[in-house]
Image 1 (tube, rainbow, N blue to C red):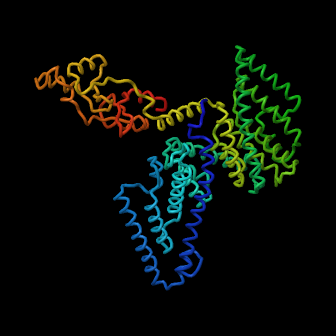
Image 2 (tube, rainbow, N blue to C red; image 1 turned 45 degrees about the horizontal axis):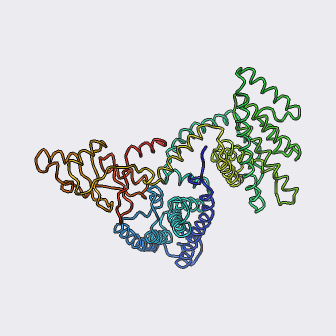
Length: 563
């Protein structure tokens, strides 16, 4: 798998997301404070408006809410007038979807003031809209002034801030991230989740109706304490899980390569089983998928030395079984390896004097992290741990560890255990290259004449190059326009010109062109507006020097890698 900093998934975006999330949260808190101050001024109390409005007689309530609506309408009218005059898009979702440069500051602020007036006066609307809009604005400003030199689109920073703002409103980080991805980015794959969710839900309901109502892993009683020590340890588990996942993928690859030399499948699987059986002499806990072992680990039945031995042997045994083509999944083995890793790391940290409140909760954190690193599906991993344990306190640390583990494997340029993941990343890289590449990468040489050259020479060049248009440049190489072979032929037949006439008499000085520093997407848009197969490429708008041509075929070939 080819990876690099050019991809949208890189450490720059991860690190930028941290301050963006912090600022976005402070913005939402500031918005809440403004509402509370207005309530205290208007109603003389910090209570919610549903109770605060009772300080006035009931017959004044329509006036209070109505007055707020009037004020809100004034602010909104001003914002709308600016939008119509300057033809800007204020809504953060539109900014993200259209990949625009920035969220408009003035209109966002006036829309926020309008919302404040409505909310403070008791209108039946939620606070989340303006909060997220202002969060998105803060992200836009940070992207323009703090991160302008980084290889990040401003719309990507806006998306981070919007997700953070929504998360700070509802305390739902996962749902907020999915919302921005699905709605703003328009990821069609997420829409396919709907039938999958329905079928999965039916399966769970069926299991419940048959009496299987308990969590897969009895871990609902444990509580993950959000202490600095636990969070730093979570980061460590996530990074180590990434290395373990990378090692697992490498071991499986090596095992498959060596077992692949054995042509007989029965012998291949038999040999693999025999090797695993020999290893089981050391500990039978490496056999099977590891479900019961995970339960025992969560119950604290393993000592540190046993955990470390089990970690090494289970990784090797799993690689041998998978490499010998044994039919089965990697989920539960990955979960067991993760549970062992999490508790082992937490136990070592505790022995070293690190403040660990409960070493066993890191079994679940490690489960999600290793599963994410091996499968390259962190969203699935964190949700799976949450649903298998029915322990909501594990969601946040599992999110952190799963993302770090998945990022670590990805940056180590390791392929996934699922080949389709490689295809997804390849298409994503191709799309990223298309969106961020520039036209200068695709310039080809093209014929060009001087204004004084004859029409006959233009026809000869066109016939030789098989081009419908020949470009015209002056003595300094500046682009002047183009001549059409169709126009020349028609005018020669109509005897309006002769073959000795200069091409300047049939030159089109409004012929479309592109610049070398424009993006491939802009070149694609330029072709969409015309019926041409080639467009002249100029160096810049000031000098307008002719450099060559851009062909539609080259862009199509570039686009086919992700279409």
